[in-house]
Length: 132
Image (cartoon, rainbow, N blue to C red; front, side):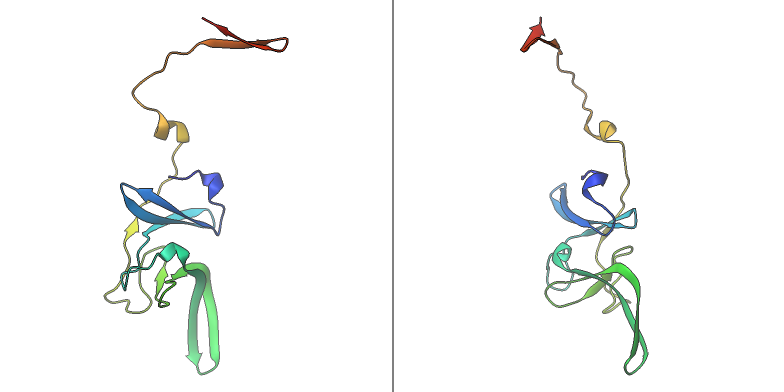
């Protein structure tokens, strides 16, 4: 989990969910999560460069599209679509695991089944007064 304020658009954050390292990305206000492990040799994807999709229609003629939507493995440069986990190296058979992401109210996530006893507190002149 991470607060939305800790993940501004274009950023990423490594979190651990049930013992699994998960890379969470904010693409223009939409959140996506991938297992933080390249299927090639296990590099942490969260450490890789975020780039765009480079295509070419001939030698020396290339263009970059989908800027900020592709994560490149830091070890060997394998590229994955952040939105789908799809590989751009061998798209017919390789992908990284994608997880669903939702934005939820913080109070609903941290509220547990137990209540602690509360005590009234006030400030009078320069003293904190606890009323029991």
